[in-house]
Image 1 (cartoon, rainbow, N blue to C red):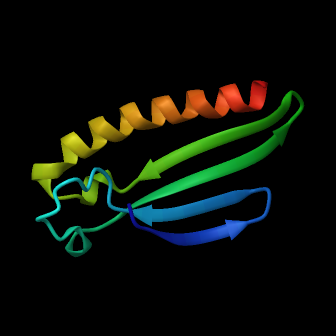
Image 2: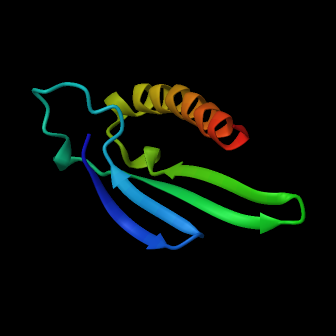
Length: 89
């Protein structure tokens, strides 16, 4: 997995670009657009809220778009549960 850090604002934002579900070693994914993943923290009256947003799937090649989105959705669901368990411990 290769990522390019887009932006870091301490305690507010961390974002990077990557090629989601780039699994076939025979394919050069660097030729296609990357998605943007953003982790945003915001203070609220109840505590800190984490928002994770991944955008840019609409720019992926049609033959990869649906599968990349589906696999990332499943992956983010698992990762957010991991973060929740970590914060609660």
